[in-house]
Image (cartoon, rainbow, N blue to C red; front, top):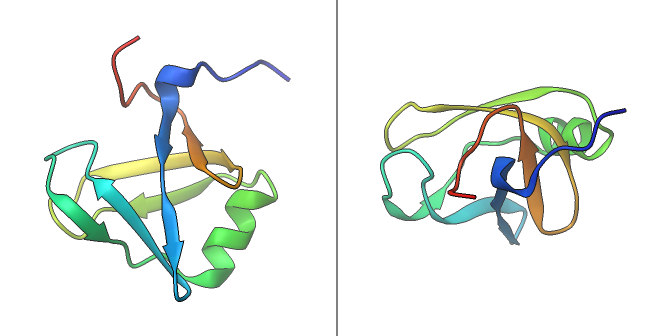
Length: 80
């Protein structure tokens, strides 16, 4: 499998079972609580492609895999 570049990552935090972003990669809204369900989060951790629609701006993040700190996506979310 091809390695995903770090520019295609976005950090997340889990608090009380909810997934939060410090800021949205699309509209830059701060402290965004996602609507990601536990089953979707589990699929992302298993490396199953998962779509996440941001509640703030409806930007779509396609998560290819997840680790304990980052979502690894199919497009760049940060500058290299």
